[in-house]
Every structure is written in C-alpha cells, then in structure tokens.
Image (cartoon, rainbow, N blue to C red):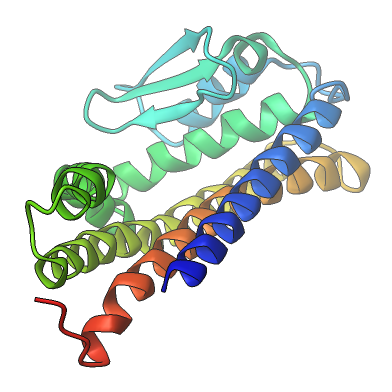
Length: 231
C-alpha cells in the first residue's frame, strides 16, 4: 500500500507538472505571435459578448499571470494583463475561451450549471482530503477504515467535479475556435492552428486534474471494496 501511494503521488505530480509546463510553453510561444487582425484580447471579448447579446458581463483586467476566468456569480470576465492588452494568438484564444463560458452561462449549458452547483461541496471535500490524512488518520484520531471511507467519498466528489469540468472547458474552447474564425479575427491555417494548440494545451491541465482525482479515489476505495478492514 505504501509503495503504491508513492507511485501514485509521483505519477500524478509528474502528470500535473507536465501539463502545466506544456501549457506555459505553448502559451509563451503563441503570446509572441501576433494576429493579423490586430485586435486586443479585451476588444475580442467585448465584440464576442456584444454579438452574443450579452450586455451584463463586465470585462476586467488582472495582474495575475494566466489568471483568466469567467465568474458566473458576479458576471465578470477577468483577463490577465497580457491577454487583456495583448494582440497575440494566445491572447485572442484565451479571451474567446472565457467568452465561451459566458455564452454557456447565458444559454444555461447543463454541465456549467452542474459545476456551479457543485462548487460548495467540492470546496469542503478538498479541505477534507488536505487535512484528514494528517490530523485524522496520521494522529490516530480516526480509525483507518472510517478515514478511508470519508476520503473515498471526498475524492469521489472531487473526481465528479473534475469530470463535469471537462465538457465545460472543451466546449468553451470549441466555441472560441469557431467564433474567432467566423468573425474573421484569426485566419485559417497558421493562425487558427496557433489558437487551437494554445487552447488544447490548456485543456490538458483539466485532464490531468481528473486523472489525479480518479487515482486517489481508487487508492482509498479499493481497500474498502476488497474487504480490508483495519478498524
């Protein structure tokens, strides 16, 4: 069990590091490649939202590197300075991707609604997976069987959240590629390929998160299913 835990920890960490390094490398490259349209990420976002009939979403600039996101609770589309002011293929791709989430929100895209509903319980589950192995099982405050059961449930919640996130993110990227091409902000060929590579690389971070949560779910679940009872 201990050997498997080490393999799981190192394997999932390596996967996460690879996904993060890849998205940073691809983003860094295409953030240096300007789009022929010459429009900024903020400009693209404003035009996409306008044409989608979305008038109640605020576009904000953030100093956080790659901190771009759409906040459905406050209807804010936040772009990092490099993407807000940038005119690169990466900036346009990221801005359009976040607009994809705003469009999902407008049309009540089911996976996005599910993810929004699951944020609260997933936050609690994340706290459990962080502290229970040390404060509960490690210090002997909770019996191993009970601890494994609680952790399996918590990781199951996180795994389902990450699973729901996959269609949300991939659909937003699909919309971004189509919209940018349809509106003429990127040209077919090299520009479209640059946007695709940027968004596809970002997608791998969500795949890595899902695989990691699935791995830890199985780690805590399999001993329970195999009948091991260390109570």
